[in-house]
Amino acid sequence: MITINANWTILAGKREAAIAALRELERDVYEQEPFVLMYTIHVPNMALTSFPTPAPSGVFFFSIFTDYAAFEKHLHGPVFQNFLKKYGDLFLMNNGNLFVTSEWLDRIAGYIRPELLLQSEVARA
Image 1 (cartoon, rainbow, N blue to C red):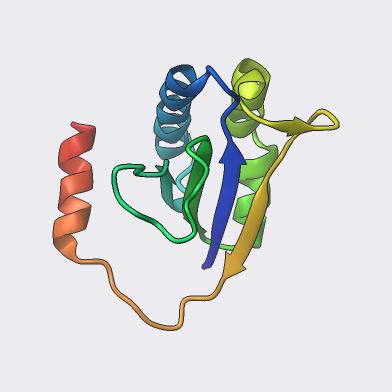
Image 2 (spheres, one colour; image 1 turned 60 degrees about the vertical axis):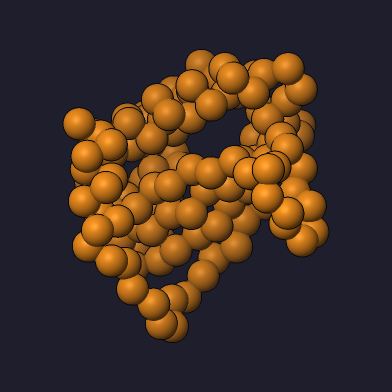
């Protein structure tokens, strides 16, 4: 199991469209990529104080894959590639590629309460 924290940037004036597209991406990953164990997408909550203050245009992914091969399968697979073709113009690009910063993480401790998992299933229904 591997974990990645990845960050994107929504272009100015495209926030609502980008959030709708990201919700579609999450649904497609959930339905079509069982090797993606967790796929959460977040934007900054500007009503609360964070240090340092995040850019309001930020998008933060926290995802868990079965292994690195599963990540590569997601990255180069039809769900993600079709998303980029359809919605790539909503996000910051660099030389024709999505601009992403990322960190690979090893979990050394922690848990997920069952209540959180149940909330996710209720929200999906």
